[in-house]
Amino acid sequence: MALMKSALLLGLALSALMPAQVLEQGERDRAMSHLHVTRKMFLDSLEGVTPAQWAWKPSPEVWSVAEVAEHIALSEDLIFGLVNKVATGPAATAEQKAETKGKDEMLLKAMVDRSKKAQAPEPLKPTHKWKTKEELIAAFKKSRDNTIAFVQTTSMDLRNHAAPHPVFKQLDAYQWVLLLSAHSERHTLQLLEVKGMPGFPK
Image (cartoon, rainbow, N blue to C red; front, side, top):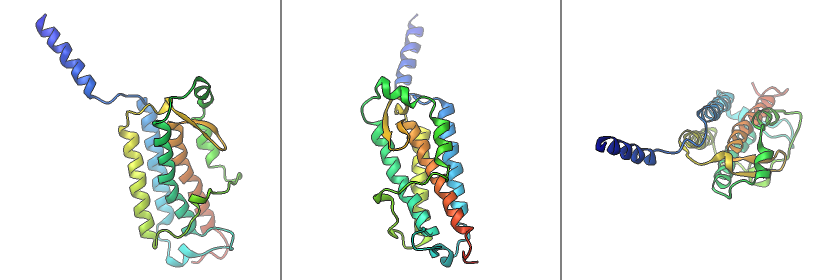
């Protein structure tokens, strides 16, 4: 009996030290997989881009490859900051939770629909923050790897905290992670559109 009691106490102590598995493993794996795929997609799109191609603008009002890439890199930290803010904020109300239900798939599809344009908020407009392509890529890699590590290890209750998005309305913190990944995919597609435009340097 004493041995069983000791084993039970040891089990309880160990479980207290282990992080809570708030996210289902399938959710965790799915987010990490999407983050890895869109990371590679963005980096591949910049492979071999020359300085002339990096700076080329099809017209004054259309962003260059450099400007689209900067928008993606800037967004990484800003959206991840929102993820943390949402996840550490007040618990979602019943109404908020009801509004987030079933939005994961819709969000991933809607974000890459390039037929619907949106104006970038002021903090995400390119200002040539990084002097070279290599500096920008290094900053992006650091931010994205940080996001992937967060998703892999967090015990935060991402599904029980929500905040509104201007287009998609209420999103839980996990959906904000998906939005971060899909946002980079959306603008990588924009970057590829610039590379395919007439006059793009060879």
